[in-house]
Structures are given as C-alpha cells and as structure tokens.
Length: 250
Image 1 (cartoon, rainbow, N blue to C red):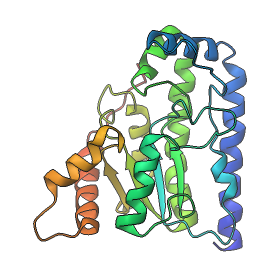
Image 2 (cartoon, rainbow, N blue to C red; image 1 turned 120 degrees about the vertical axis):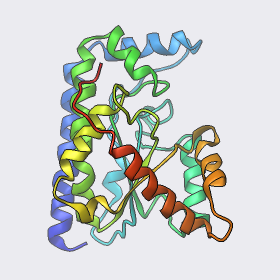
Image 3 (cartoon, helix red, strand yellow; image 1 turned 45 degrees about the horizontal axis):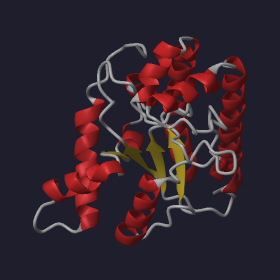
Image 4 (cartoon, rainbow, N blue to C red; image 1 turned 135 degrees about the vertical axis):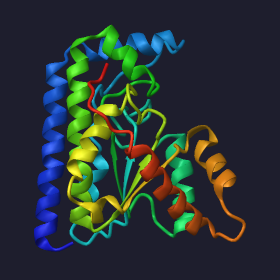
C-alpha cells in the first residue's frame, strides 16, 4: 500500500474500533440477552465475553501487506467472541475457507485477506439476530446502524487495498432478510462506482457445505475451480444485489 492508502486504511480501522466500543457501551444488557439465546440452544455454560466484536486481525495489516480479498462474513459466532480470540472466521467455517483459498486460489487467508462482517454483534447463530432484536429491543438500532456502517467499509477497504470483495452468505440478503439494511447500504456505497462493484462477488457460506455444494452443482465441465468461482460469484452479484429495496431491520 502507498502511505496515503495505509493512512486511509488506519482511519477506517480505527473508526470501526471506536464504533464497536461505543455500541458496546450503549447496550449494557446485551450480554445477558445473548446468554439467554445460548441457553435457548441448550448451551447453558456459554460464556459471553465480547458481545460486540472488533476484529483484532485488522491490526495485523501493515503497509507491506498485500491484501487480495476483502471477505465479508455474517456476524461473530462463539469462538470469535472469546476474549482471547476476537478475530473473525476462526471457527469451523473459517478453517474451511482458509483451506479453500490456499488450495484453489493460492491466497493465504490469514495474511492476504481482510475480514469484516455484516454486523459485529455476536449471536450463537446468525439467524438469532432477529430474535435478539425482539428479546432486547434496544439492540435493534445498533444491529441496523452497524450493518450500514460495515457496508460503507466495503468499498473503502477495497479502494485502499486494490482488492476484490468476497461476500460470504447470501440467504439473508433479500427483502425483509436480516441483512437487508447491509445490502441496501452497500448499493448506496457503490452508487456511481461500477468498476468497484464489478469486483464484488457473492457466494454461499462455507458452513454446512453450502458453498461446496453450490460450486459442484454450477461448475461447468470445462471450467477450472478458479474460473467457476469467479463466474458464479459474478452471477450471484447480479442476482442478489438487484433485490435491494428500502427497509429497516425488523
């Protein structure tokens, strides 16, 4: 990165860290609500350590870093919120992604990828974000606001790194979906930037074999894995992001 690009990156990263801290202060009852969500799943020993998670891996990016992809996942899960971790995509899905990027794309997932989420608000399962908003209504505004802010980070980071964007997880990018605020805000952030949006690719999540199943089903006989990934990702971009319509979180 050039000094100017790295300076811009630091400003984006530091604002994200500050916002995460501010949202955490604004929601003193969030951890209790998250514990109730975990208990509802039969995980009574679930220790909520970081209700809203800043990705400390962003602090490892230095001017010499060569970031090939900005990866956007859903929200922090159990391992991500552990105080000793506070890094995104470090659970099972992250390990699958790490192996795939190395094997098929020649990309070191932990050194050449900048990972953000659609929201930094933790839930045991992403689908529980909606339940969390109902259980703890004060969280709704933060879930919505954080999605809009993190969507604005995507083209900003892409410009800093000259990277492509891998959006992981498409099922809730739809009208009335959990991540519709993020989807709408992303469209606004890329308005007038067709070149930037052309380097955004959408994919099923690596969890539960969803990505692998979709790739196997849609890959053409004469395509390499890399060629199939880029084509499918572009097709998903056109299909999914055309759905954007104004709406709130719930």
